[in-house]
Length: 308
Image 1 (tube, rainbow, N blue to C red):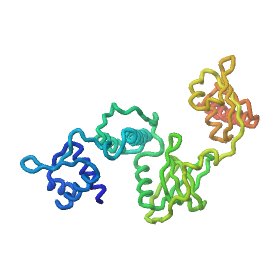
Image 2 (image 1 turned 180 degrees about the vertical axis):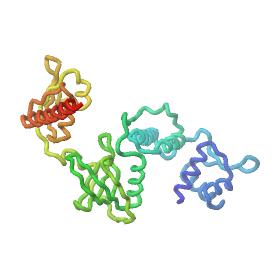
Image 3 (image 1 turned 90 degrees about the vertical axis):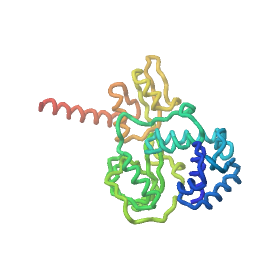
Image 4 (image 1 turned 45 degrees about the vertical axis):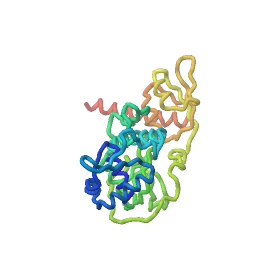
C-alpha cells in the first residue's frame, strides 16, 4: 500500500539515510518511477525531501527536520509514546520494538519520557504471550474460538464465541466477544480461558456495543453494604484497595471500611487474606459465612496434623 511505503521511506530518511531512488525502489520492491512519485507526494505534503545528483547524491531530509513540524504536535507525540509504554507495561508482547521505532521517528530519547508504566507482578498469570497472540490473530482474522471457561462463581462452561476485541481493565486482559450460547456480547477474562481452540470457521459480525460503556463488576453481581474493621497494621492495603471516602480512621488506630461489595466466595477469599487483622461487622450473614469457612479450614488442618 502506498501509505505504508511512504512511511517506510520517511522512516529511512529520518534515520539520516541518503539513498538514491534506485536504492529506495529496491528496499520497497517497486519501480524507480513509483519511488519518484512517492517523493513528489511527500513534498506536496510539506515534507522537505531534498534530491541531489552526482557523486554521493540521493534523496535525504534536512538534519534538523522532525516529524512533528508536519504531522503531529509534541503533545500528540507524548500521547502516542505513553500509550505504547502503557501497553508494554500491561504485558502486550513485542510492543517495545514499535516504541523504539516511533521514538526514533519523533527524535525522542528514552529519558525524555515523563511517564513510566509497569503492571507486571511477581508471578506469571494465566495469560501468556502464546495465548495473547492466538487471540489477537483470531480477532484480526475474524475466526471463531472455543474454550473452557472458569468464572468467579466456580462454574465451568464450554463456550463458542466470536472474538471482537481485547480489553485491558483493572490490571487484567479481557476478550470482548459474542457468546453464541448466550446470544450476547460479553467480556471474558483471558486468564480464565482454558483449552483454547481457534477454529477455521470465520464470522462477519461487527461489534454492536462499546465494551467500555459496560462496567464489568457492577452489572455482574448483586452488591450489599459491608462494614469492616481492619487493624492499623494493614493501613497500606486499606489505602491501596479501598476508596478514600469509604475509609474512616478510629481513635485506636484501626480503620472502619464501609462499602458496597459482592458477598460471594471471591469476597470471602479476599477478606481472609487479612488474616486476624480484619473483623466483619456487617452484615451478620457474612460473619456467619466467614466463621463457617474458618471452621472448615481449621478442621482440615487439624486432621492433617493428627495424621502426620
